[in-house]
Amino acid sequence: MSADVAETIAKIRQQLVAVSNQNKVPHLACSLSSVEILYTLYFKVMNIRPDEPDWAPRDRFLLGKGHAAAVLYSVLGYRGYYPPEQTMTLGQNDSAFEEHPGKHPPAGVENISGSLGHALGLATGMAKAAKITASPAHFYALVGDGELNEGTNWEAAMFAPAHQLDNLTVIVDFNKLQGTGRSCDIMQLEDMEAKWKAFGWQTARVNGHDVDALYHVLKSDYIEAGKPRAIIADTVKGGGVSFMEDDNNWHYRIPTEEEVESVAKELGLVN
Image (tube, rainbow, N blue to C red; front, side, top):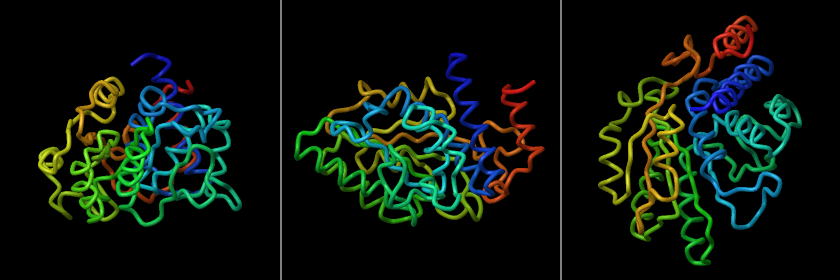
C-alpha cells in the first residue's frame, strides 16, 4: 500500500472517530472495520463519476449495514462527491448525513437503510434489471456478518446464481461481532466461504484490511462468467485503532476528546 493510500485511509479513520465524538454518534467500530473495503471499491474498482453522481452506466454500491453509514459518507467525501468536511454534520438536525442513509441522502448514496438485511436483495433485483436492459453497471452490496442472520439474504443468495448474475458482488464484512455478542455464538455462520459456494457463487476469502488483496479479488478480470461473486472479508471490529479493536463496547460507546487526540497520534496524523 502506497504512502498516499495509507494517508487517505488514516484521514478517513480519524474523521470517523472525530465525528462520533463531536456529534455523539455511535456505531464507530463497525464503520472502522469497513474502511479498506470501501476505499478499494470507490478509489480502485468501481466505474463512477463523482462529479456526475447520477451517470446512468455507473456501478452501484449498496450499504447493508446501514449503521456504518459514517464510513460511506467519509469515503464519498474523500472521493470527491462533496467536500469531506461536510461529513462532520453527521447526525445533526436537518443534515443530509443521517445515522442510517435516509430518503434524501447526499450525492453518491444509492439506498436507504433502516432495518438491516435488504441491501443484497435490492442489489440482486437491480442486477437482474441491468441484465434485461443490457446495462454495463456492476452492483456491489456490503453486508455485515450479523446482518446475515436475516433470511432475505439467503433468498437473494439462491436467486442470483439461478439467474447468472455475474454483474453482482456481495462483500461480507466479517468482523466476528454484532451488537449483542460474537456472531458465531448467535448464529452458525462458518464455514462462510463454503456456504456461498454451495449456493453457486464464485467465492474468495481475503484480509479485509489489505487494499491490495481486496483489489485482486474485486477487480473485473476476477469475475467468472455466469456467477455472482461473494467476497468474505475477514476484518476486525474497530480495525485500525488499537484500543478499539475487537472490543464490542465500541459498538455503542462514544470516544472522548482525549481518545480522539490519541487516535490522531496513532494514525500518524499529528506528532
